[in-house]
Structure formats: structure tokens, C-alpha cells
Amino acid sequence: MNAVELIETKRDGRALSAEAIRWLLGAYTRGTVPDYQMAAMLMAVFFNGLDGEELAVWTEAMLHSGEVLDLSAIPGAKVDKHSTGGVGDKVSIPLAPMVGAAGVKVPMMSGRGLGHTGGTLDKLESIPGFTTGFDAATFADLLEKVGVVLAGQSERLVPADRKLYALRDATGTVPSIPLISSSIMSKKLAEDLDGLVLDVKVGSGAFMKTVESARALASTMVGIGAAHGVPVVGLLTPMDQPLGRTVGNALEIVESIDVLRGEGPEDLTEVTYRLGMEMLVLGGISETRADARRRLEAVVSDGSALEKFGEIIAAQGGDTRVLEEPSRLPQAAHHLELPAQATGFVQSCDAYKIGVAAMRLGAGRRTKEDVIDPAVGVIIHAKVGDQVAEGQPLATIAWNDEGRLDDASPLLADAWQIGESRPEAAIQVIEEVRA
Ligand code: URA
Image (tube, rainbow, N blue to C red; front, side, top):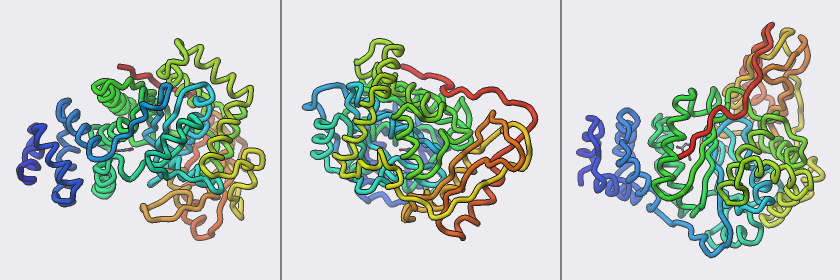
């Protein structure tokens, strides 16, 4: 096989053979095809796509580039949720214990934040002592004992994606439907799941800016799941404004605990329930979504979902006292209010600008090597549809470093638009995509 010929094939819009895809991804993972050739191939795929057959083989080749988990010895259905990423998207943190408390096993492998989007692992690691790196045996052990494990992706799982994702990030080839769907689905299929729920974010703070592109991404991933015998349901949810009222790692843990107490903000609570309902149905605990909702509400109101979060924190080495005493989480040294410049209704509260501002404050990373500050972020007081008076705080900025505050402030000052008319109420689930 010759990498140049394969690049030319895709560049010219022709399909790659199964043999060619397997060879290319294998050789790239081993290091015998260099980054510059793979970068050219990724750009060719970005422009010319992959057809159904190519995508199936590409995903399969990524999946088998490393270790695949075997959780078959653990009784019960295993269902995970994956989000395509957003701002203030802490859903996994209340969702996993809720669904675990309702009886479904949740082997959740999450990622870190990069750019303007936050990462579940970074949020969890703001809990003192909480660890997320486990080998396959410990991962299975935790799942069996606790019913939920919130971990990072092991080094051995889908090594092809680790290399490819970093290369895509550096070559402008991330927002491609076949590349995103093969990246996500190869990692999820390696978890040995019985079902998967996808939260496909749409809007300014998401990779997918339009409902059409989000729908196409969701259908592609649902199709990959079906081809592998794994039922997948995709929910398209809005990401024009941040989800919930906090953006920043420790701040988002506090808000997640609020959801587990039944005291979370409406949008975050609703998205968490809607995804959880799908997980309970896929996990065979509920026959209907209405029954699933009742069960989820019950584990919140009787305290067992919060208790399950305590069990997870204890099993993963964290300080469970944060549940009762959130002041044990990292705290920013300074707070600054951002006043409304006009009286009226909030028309928009831009997820992308707030996400970038939070990253500049230190809540996220510009590059993989950056060290995050778990304490900083933005507490949002006014969201779309809220009525505000001039001078009233739209948000509170939690900050530690003056230079970073100066860097973030102009974006925040520009993130809210206020107008005279009350905008339509936001919906929490735009569309459902099923096989
Ligand atoms: N998340 C992933 O895991 N991969 C992508 O390509 C995009 C988002």
C-alpha cells in the first residue's frame, strides 16, 4: 500500500477500499505513516466525506486499534451517555448517579475540556482526591461494586483516536461528520455497552451550528451503533446559551449536586432527565419513558441519587464532604459582577463567548498542556427570556488572576444582548433521532 496513492484517491472523491482503510489506520497508529500524510488524508476526508461502507470500516479499524473492554461478567445492562460537547454541560455528573441509583450500570468514559468546551474529567477532579484514571480491571471492579464509574479513557482504548484527534485539532479537521462520528463511536463501542444515548449539542457553543448538521451527525452515529448491534438514541439539545447557570469546574460540581437534590436549574434538570429516561429504557429498567421519568424523580426525591454520587466519590478516592460542604471545593479569591447595560429582556447569552471567556479565566485549556484553575468561572444570573434592569448583575465572574480577568472581560461584556421584546421560551430537546 502506498499512502500517497490513497490520499490521491480520497482527494479525487473516490472511495477507499476496506483493505486500504485498515492498512492506513493501522500504519498510522504504529507510526509508519507520518502525521503529514495523515493530515492530508484527513483534509481529503473533510472535503469529500466517507460513504457508508468506508465509514463502517474506518470505525471498525479505529475500534480494533487497541484494547476492547469485556464487561460481560458483570450482571445487568450497561448504558453510557456521550455529549458532543458544550459550555456549562455538566449533565454527566448528576446523570450517572441518578441512572445508577435507578438500577442501570453506567460505565462512563469522559473527556477533558479543550478550547471553549468544558470536560467532565476536569470538573470531577475539582473534588479533592477524586481520581479518574483506571486500568481495565479496576474499571470493571468499580462498575461491579458501585454500579457507576466515571473515568477517563484508558491509554489502551482506541489509540488511533488519541493520535487522530490531536492531529485533527491541529489541522482544522475536527468538524467533519464522518470523523467525529467514527471518533466517538469507536470509543463507545470499545466500552462493551448494551446501549448508548447521545446528546448532540446544536448552536453557537457546539461543533454543530445547525439542526441539519446535528441531525446528520446523530443519524450517522445511530447507524454505526445499529451496524454493531448496539442500540443508540440521539437527542438534539440546544447550545446557544450555556446549560444551567455555571461555567467552570468546581462551580459546575456545586450545580450538579443541586440537580441531585432536586434544586437544579430547569434547563439542566430537564436535559438530565430526558437523557436519563432514554438510558433507563435502553437498560431495560423501564418500558416507557413516562415510567423512567417517575423512577428518576423518585431517586432524586428519596435522596438515593445523591447517596450514589457519594458512593462514587468515595470509591474514586474523593472527599465526600463536598456534598454537604461545597466550600471544601476550590474557591476563587475574587468575584466581580457584570452589570446589564440596558433594561429589557435577555435576547441571547452567547455560549461560545462565555465558554472562551471561562477558558481565558483559566477554567479551560488553550492547548492540551495548559493547567486549569478549578476554582474560576462564570455564574450566570440572567438567561434568555429573563427580564433585567440596567445595572442589575447578568453574571458574577469568579477569578484569581488579574491578567486573565482582563483577557476574559471584553468577551463577557459582549455575550449578552438585551432587547425590548420577550423572546420565545427555550425548548430543551429539539429532536430525537432513533434507529
Ligand atoms: N468528541 C470526540 O470524542 N471526537 C470528536 O471528533 C469530537 C468530539
